[in-house]
Image (cartoon, rainbow, N blue to C red; front, side):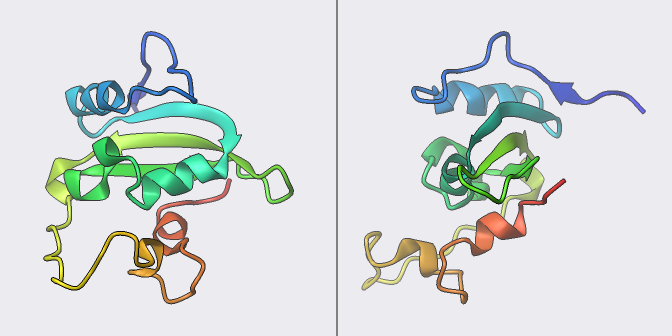
Length: 125
């Protein structure tokens, strides 16, 4: 099996990541996986999975998985990203009375934790 990992020339600083550049790198290497960060706070993975990073939203074809998750504080994980435009879900129509600040994380989450989408695309190994 051919190794399909993709690596940037140098890793972005996680505090000042240029998400548009990362998105373009992923689009240029469609279907391949990029190990973006190692052992970073799970909040970064959650932000990507929940669509808080506009350049990497699922409806644009981006996927995220995590590995090496720790369960004790500080909770950390390795983050892998990939671009699959043919798998992008159709954009949902917004209701006229829906506002971004009205519990956006709970929209697809019946657990009330705001982590449904992150949990769905995240695996522990």
